[in-house]
Image 1 (cartoon, rainbow, N blue to C red):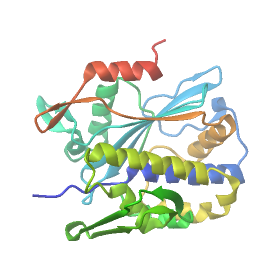
Image 2 (cartoon, rainbow, N blue to C red; image 1 turned 45 degrees about the vertical axis):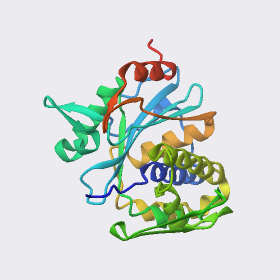
Image 3 (cartoon, helix red, strand yellow; image 1 turned 90 degrees about the horizontal axis):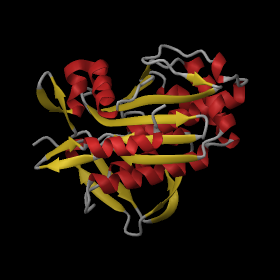
Length: 290
């Protein structure tokens, strides 16, 4: 049976945001949202009284780059500074051509367009931009940032999987995780009682540590090196100039909170079915209708 390969899309998008924000701070002058070069938007970004709600879909591809093992819906509201991040489980079933398929295979069946449309069906929300990553750059980007300080659980993490060419050897305690150890941390789930749910919690802690430590001027000097490490594999409809402009405004306006969620689902045998009522309730708290 083919083993699942756990990917790191959530961390790559945070790393790229850190890189672009640093470049924006160091080399560009901020401008009002109304003057931003928007790039090739999927759905138009609406500007209301100088404020925006910016929605992006972040996808991390699997080993053969045909399926999306990581899907994140990310939204930033400039009016209140809130950042909303919702993970969509790869095993969530959606309807395509009258047949149920797992959403991670939508990319293989219909590419970006089908995946984006299925997420829009699930959320009922517009998507302005998309970002697609492979997992290959993870280690070198973490290393380019100088590693991330993290409090590893006392028993540490130890695991070997020849199929994935993966060896995890992380002792317990507070330490600086380099690229190799950081990858092991975010991919590990061998002894988690709640499997992926517990892995997501560790990932969220890592993301918070990353943002808290790297969103400052001290690391601006390493930004060109970070960007150079990822620029060849990045796929996105968001132009560099637009991203830099948005990033400058986010720095100026600030991020007041980062809310992380998982798309509500119902377990039906071995399947995950979208819990439509719970999804509507969750999203209505963050995206009230006009």
